[in-house]
Image (cartoon, rainbow, N blue to C red; front, top):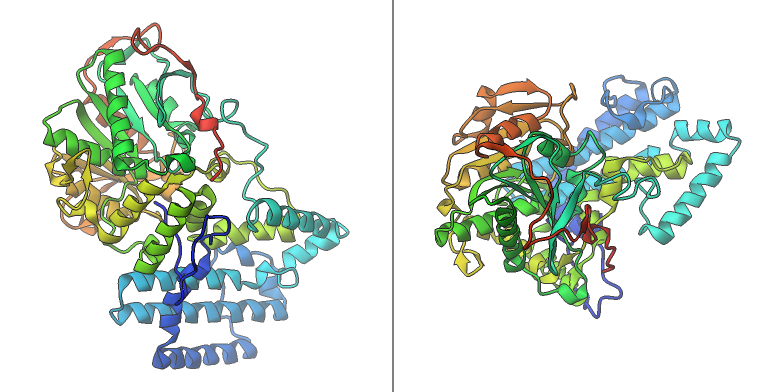
Length: 559
């Protein structure tokens, strides 16, 4: 999902889009201001902090960083008296800020204001860490000595380059290390359908036999599809093909200003077309589907329409970290205030799209320690080169979101219209998720900071058909890029989800490894008989247009 920020008391006038505000921690500062407007709570925390600072001055060991807090891993934070007290003072202050937000939440304040306050507090606390400065970071100072000052020169060059080319944020990855079609998105296949919105890729079988019923994969339209087809061994598509599934995947076009009118109807219709092409090529009467994140949102609107018109062309639907009901607690609610939504709409209307960088900044600032200041320290202070990592390359390769779809997403996000029967209308059909009766398989992730797992659990209960919920370890993206064989990963299964997610989790069975195999078994059971694998891709009506990964994924249309 995408959102932009708050506006001051006098909203700026948005013109033709040449100088529009990007999303930064400032957008949520209003929520934190309300927290600080409570004199009783502030006074109580000031007293608490004062006591902590006295103890720190006297030399206490009571205040210490968490064992996994990499910012304070250098021995100086434990053994150097000055650095030890500096670190303890910061941690005491940070704890006071967190408690202020918790007090505000406990007072029964509006959940959206609480999330804005928490978002701003998190960014403020992360930014204020002494490790973000050269003098306040003993590891960086040691690096200066070890390199004879070369780390400072390299870090300064990186800083200047990021100011010019990366919106003032530190680069997360070496963009020259990977190329789509060469290193990423390399599972063999071909584009068998193309229109102005999508390319449909059919993948080559790697087994002698395949299942009759094809699988249509729906990635989020706010990201490049190759998150699902990273390097060999880390590819969901590759894994699905290896299970004998006939896999078709939608590659969304990166929209420009001229596509501002693309909306839910536009995208839902393309999923419908993709299923029709897959059926025609394979000869199957229906398909299985799997939608990820925002792709899953649009998939549900199509399923609703198909149910309303008694179209049985979709046999089952799986959903990866897909949130449909935004009324529950979620960090992204920091951007759901009326004035923030109003500004976001004005930005997208002026530009025709919400630019990839604007959307990316929302999610980046949700995890500032990991996605901002960790890289700031490594690149700007330590003078290290950005890492080369496939997920980070994908994360930096953003897409725009057309204005019309953006406005509809904001309405879904703010007014919870998907879970109100008739709140949205897609393809001429009022949306009523309870109308959907196909079998569903839903995943959530324990540490998901974008779509909390309890919200994904709610997705499994919003539709009327038989449903299975699976909870994965890790976070939003890591739970999806989850190849088998990793002993550090795990997942929980518990069958049909009941009313209470915590009760489900308490009774669920934990498994070591990836949920991919469990999903594959679930899908194969709904994929019909084995038949000989096709000798060629496409068909007479839908011939091969070009090799995968196609052209749309390579398009760098500017905002």
